[in-house]
Image (tube, rainbow, N blue to C red):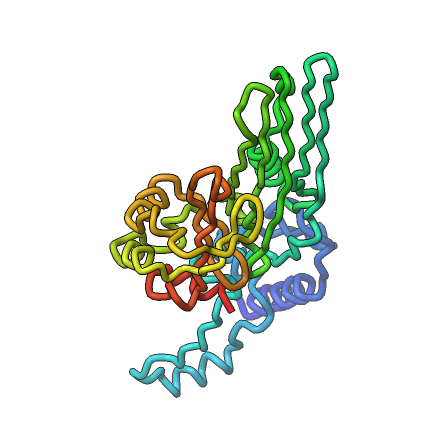
Length: 309
């Protein structure tokens, strides 16, 4: 009996030595194969275990876990990171790049001559080239050529003579104010006729600026017109007209006011705003009633006040 027990013990020790002394040569699926030909089944890792195995190397070690257990977190909230301000404006719209729009202003020239009908048309007009937004450029040029009187086909009235000149100002490197001075004559007309048409636009957006966008049109403006507070050297259709004694008496300030509100034709320069009003041909066909900005500052809208020097 004792011999049998000793034999079984020797056999068991031999088997254990054989098993522990062999090395694995690989896995096949979830089977781990040993060089002795034996094998054992290993479990496939769960998705969570795979995620843990792919975790960064800075995951806490067992020693760190023990330290965390010995130092439990306090009830105080963790320190907040300083909030970084966005480089964009509050409306999240990127700031528009500033351009020198003056370099885009070019002179356009249009001429049409028809000796058979005695039609003579000469037009100098403002043309914009190089604007960063080609759609805005196209729209602005269409407005400028239409205002200048360029038509397709050209006007062919019998005995027509048309001469158009322009001048312009740019405020705050962005707002264009252009005026077209027109001399119109026709063989059947009693005399030549002059006019001044004006346009103010935002060169950055292409938006037309109306008179009501610039200032309030209320009784305060009417009172200034009644009191003749405008520049007494009036820009007329033919020249700078020095007013003679009583020349203004035939025109009422109220009449000027209602025409300004109705037509809204105005011109801006660096120092003043001018309102275009119609007068008799003897007085030049039109006048530009000019007010220095300081004299009408209480009427100007806040956004425009920021533009003027």
